Length: 255
Image (tube, rainbow, N blue to C red; front, side, top):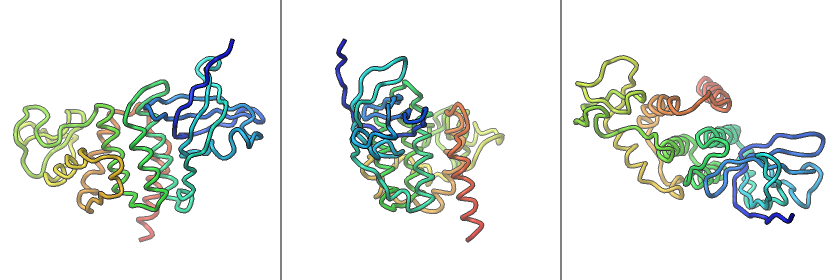
């Protein structure tokens, strides 16, 4: 029985070698789906696949339904290799982190429209040598928003009242807390100006990722806020995050 070939644009999140010549590849499609495909003879067929299965590449995938949950990859065209990522270890590590974060939030077989555009812009930005710290914050913030987990920022998450300055923040309780609702236990402290910056960032578009540069105070105060928010969403610790934290710690010690 003939099965129609479907063509879709996607980002290669990762691949795993299978047997002597095959490869299992995980994609995030332009529609926001995460799925796996089986590339038969991927490591020997330069014509059908070439370098197109390298992680972080933007590609055009020609596929058919396969056995079980694996699509059968017929051909994969390379649209953007992003070899600039390999010039800096931090950029390469952040690319892996962004892809693993997308994979974990969407989940295999999941659907999250809008995530492709942000990850695609993030990878392009890193490959071009753009500011990594602001881009990481923007990616995490918008991933949380797209997944429906963005916390309350500019009003109290419990009574919807006005906030003081500084503000107590608890991801477990929905976000920012006013002085009356804050308990002083398990909360992080963040300035009201930083929360205002984050709120404005949420109105940004993927193509603006290289135009937004956040100040040192905003980056410093936002890090624990985003860590607690992401921890409340993710089902497991990310392997790439541990590597990223180690790399950043070593960089700080050298300076």
